Image (cartoon, rainbow, N blue to C red):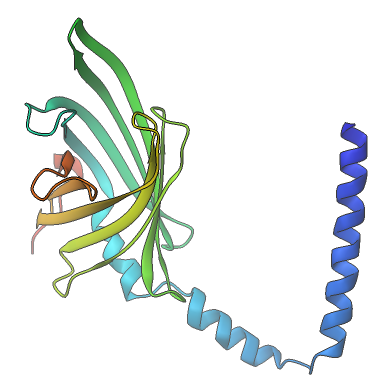
Length: 215
């Protein structure tokens, strides 16, 4: 069965390539210089990409998680490392923490790991973020913009809620830069009543070794 799948994939690949070549051969000849300029227009890192540079560095994080809305949050501590990759096009963020989740019969301590990739889509003119972690099997994708000050980033996305069995539940993430060395990120459930949607807060403080030096 495996060899049949490989053979089928090979045939489909060859067929697709031949069809693409046939179509291209029928189209007007494209000026390579125009193609290069078009590529540079949409694929060269822009000023919007430079806004992500503020996230680079090593951070100490404090996470607050609200499981029941108005109750006391569960507080966890961790670390976050962020760096620009692929020529400044994307920001990679790694988060590590020790989560303490309280239940009626005690506290569940579990290591938390998360990975985020954020970039600016020049064609769509918006930021796009992807997030995965070791707590779920889902991939979270959100899109957003920053305000005129460049100090507040707002993202909107949808995720499946495995606890409630609800698909495509909308959420909002707001990153607020307090200083160049401190950022507060808040996550809201947009299906909750007004004033009750906040369920996660992450306060990131840049470690002293990577703090921004003032002139």
